[in-house]
Length: 147
Image (cartoon, rainbow, N blue to C red):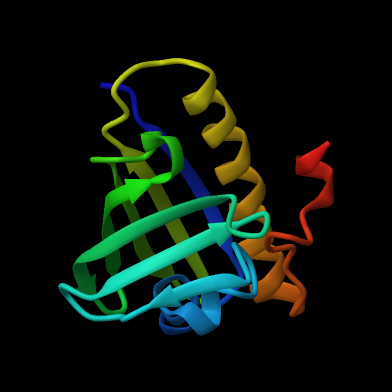
């Protein structure tokens, strides 16, 4: 089964990065403004995109501050992400935090995984930008991805 993986280094403390990737308040600043998440093991979440035309429902599988958060994708529009796992592994190196991102368990390599790979790369750069400058580019502000 194909996976998406990215490694990005962010000039921010590990605790702050964990807070921003593991809470709805944080996620609204870099991934999607349409975010609801109960940030605890077993907690439910839903992330909507483009007026909720696309949505992903998740359950928090791991919540280990400040090192890891993992979500199991329970359902998604068109079933694209169903049964996949999204994780953020964090490691501090002074004032820089390395984020090892993985979206695992896609059923096949196709246009959906190609699109998701591009979008995750964009959103992880939005995460970096938000943490380093205070201004991310979450959905629906990600206009260059719509065209």
